Length: 311
Image (cartoon, rainbow, N blue to C red; front, side, top):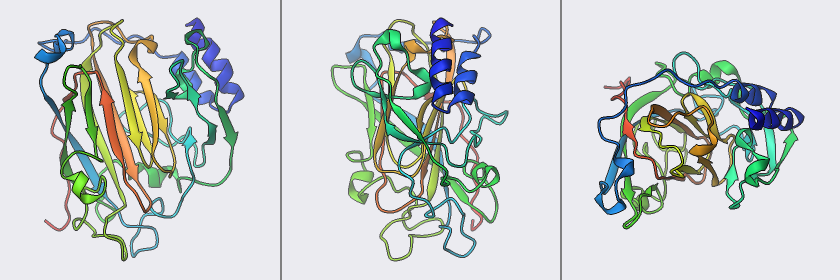
């Protein structure tokens, strides 16, 4: 808790008071049912070669199209922090904390030089303080428009399921999904699940650029094992563990990356099952990147329902 109080003081000075408060107030969960086999403890070469996770992706129209959504194609903000609240709502969805957030002028970094979420900054681990700059220009139109990103809304979006396959790096316990190299994305020129589908490709471009992606998984926490989760991509990306924000790549930007070391998360209890949820948005031309690297053994929680108005 001492480290959390230190984080609170630092984040208050940089405009992330709400994030710091939620992290400082994070509590240990009730005892939960553990997964039947904790394969994360196995030797690397005995682990499965692949992990398959079911995602939901939702297609939108750009703001300048008929019945378009105000948050897609309109903004080009660069990397921000603090657009969403640090805890998920009762539906397990992110909520808007600020329409503008703060500009990430210099990323916070850990002792290994990896970019980290400011809310897990810890001087005792040798982290490097970043710079967050106040801004006033919008990155999201409103709380109501943001609410539509990860919910099926007739007339606003259409949705479908999508399988994300992470492959184990031989001889290691690291699993990777990379849209630069994984089929079929490597032949599409990026992560474009809605090309020639949904509301169609944008204007005269060869891609459908306006969509969100939502993954809902779970894993067994192993204290002291050095487990990590890294996301690299664009645009907005938020990762929540046990409903608490641990990666924040807010805004419309080029490829960005953050890593979370799970041993930093003091409220996690060894041997317990926790949720890990990823919320991603592709909001602007011209690129779409999506990369996950992790040592966690994850599995999908359930197959979500989807909505296609033209079925």
